[in-house]
Image (cartoon, rainbow, N blue to C red; front, side, top):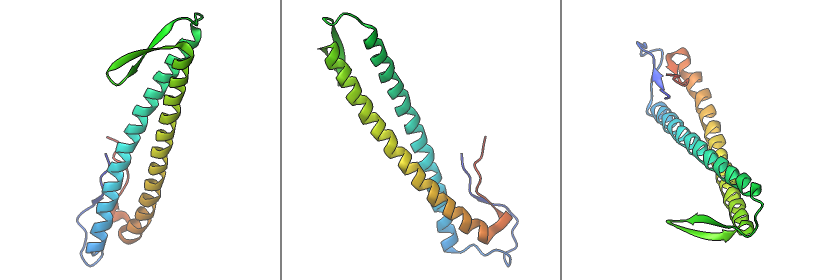
Length: 136
């Protein structure tokens, strides 16, 4: 969890928290929580990718080409040949990899925004503000 907090007590004449500063602090907090969400979404998609990879590997072990493999589409299982199933797994993996890539690009963009905000906020507040990740 990330906490952007102004450490008190701060002498008012030292640091004047303007509306604009407050907006920046809020933007920092919003972006931080969005980044946390994205990172857990990436983790979930990587787990799914691993499952698809495992299924694909298991399929390669089969040496009976005549077997029909049940493949779940929505709520139903449809049986396909080994080759068709392999192609469907590949397509699903590619789609997931694209999604992960997109999410990782969003994370990078947010990290850029957070970096810029950190520079601005530390420049103004110095040691009076804490923008580091709360490791607890």
